[in-house]
Image (cartoon, rainbow, N blue to C red; front, side):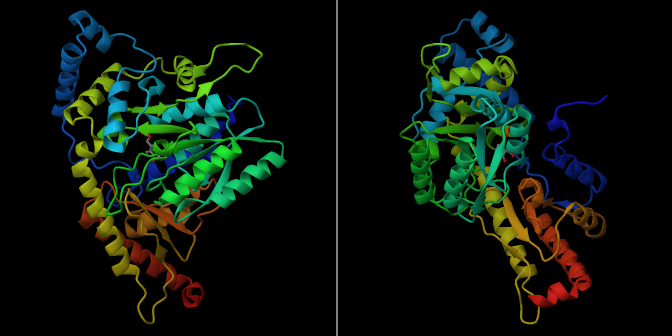
Length: 439
Ligand SMILES: Cc1ncc(COP(=O)(O)O)c(C=O)c1O
C-alpha cells in the first residue's frame, strides 16, 4: 500500500518510537529520556473516591436527579465537557484568573486541544504558525497532522526571542504568508526548561496586539517551580483576548486520564461569505471536536472533577507533594552535574548545562554530537539514556545537546545516571583529543 498522508512518515512523529524502543532494549539503563510525571503517589483506590466525590457534587451541589446523574456518567455528553466550571474555579483559585466557563472546551488531553486549534486557525496555504524552537514534539506533531506550517523562532535562556519573533513575522509577510499565532510554553518549557520574564510576557502580548496574531500559551509545568516566584500566566495578563490558553491535567492529576482543555474566549465574526452571528472560538472548536472525539470521556472528566473538588479546586494544593519531589530532583540533578562536570584545573570545561528554576528538564551541551547513534552507544556501553535535542528542532539544531528529564527518578538514580554520563564524556574525550584539548 502506498500514498498515505505525508505526516505518517514525518520524523517528528516517529522520533519517540526510537526512544521507546531503546528503553525497551536496555531496561537496566538509567533513563533521563521519559518526560513522564512522578508516579510514587498514585493509588488505584483514589479513582473510585474521586468518582464518588463527583457523584455527590452532582447530587448535592447541582441538585441532579438519580436519572440525570446516571446519564452524566454513562451517556454521550456535552461536547465542551461538564467540568468547565470547576476548571474555571481552579484558575481563579491558583492563578487569580477569571474566565467565562463557556469559553472552555474540555479536551482529550492537551493534545486534542492543539489539534483542534491548529485545524481552526489555518484556513489556507498562506497561514503559518510561529513557535519558539526547540519545541514540544506533541505540538510539532499536531501541526503536521493538522497540515499547519510551523515557522521557527529562536529561543534563549529567557524563552522566546522577541526580536526574532518580530523578524519572522515580517519575513513571513514579505513572502506573502499570514502569521496567525505564536506557540509558547512560558514556564519551564519542554524541552529547554526556559522561563519567560514578566517584562517579556508583557512585551509578547504587546507585540501580538501590534502584529495582530494570537498567542497560544501551553503551561503544564507552571505548578512545579523551585524557589522562583510565581509569574502570571499570559492569559492572566491578556486584556485584548489575544491569548488562547491550553491546559493539561497530565502533570497535575494523571496523564492516563487524558483530560486537558482550551480557553478560547475570542469572538469570531463571520467573513461575509456566509453571514452568521458572532460566536466564541470555543464553540467553533467544539464543532470540530464533535467530529473527532464527540466528547471527552465522561468517566475521566468525573475523576478529574472529583480530584479538583477534594482539593478545594487548587492544583497547587493537590500537587504539593509532587512539586517537592521535582524540586529535590532538580537540586540533585544540578548538584550531580556540578560535581561530575564542573571544570577543575587541567581538565576541559567542555560540558555545560542550563539551570532552570523548576519543571522537569535540564539541557546538557556536550563536546561531541549527541545524536541517535550516540544515544544507542550511551545506552549499550554506559547504561544511560537521554533524549537527543535535535528531535525538538525539526533537524535544524541541538546537535550537541541532550535533554535530561528527572521527573520519574530517585535522587540516587539521578546521581548514578550523571556519573554514567561522565563516563561517556571521558570515553569520547579520549577518542577526540583535539576537541577536548581545545577547551
Ligand atoms: C509542553 C507540553 N504540553 C502539553 C503536555 C501534555 O499534554 P497532554 O495533556 O496531551 O498529555 C506536555 C506533556 O509532556 C508538554 O510537555
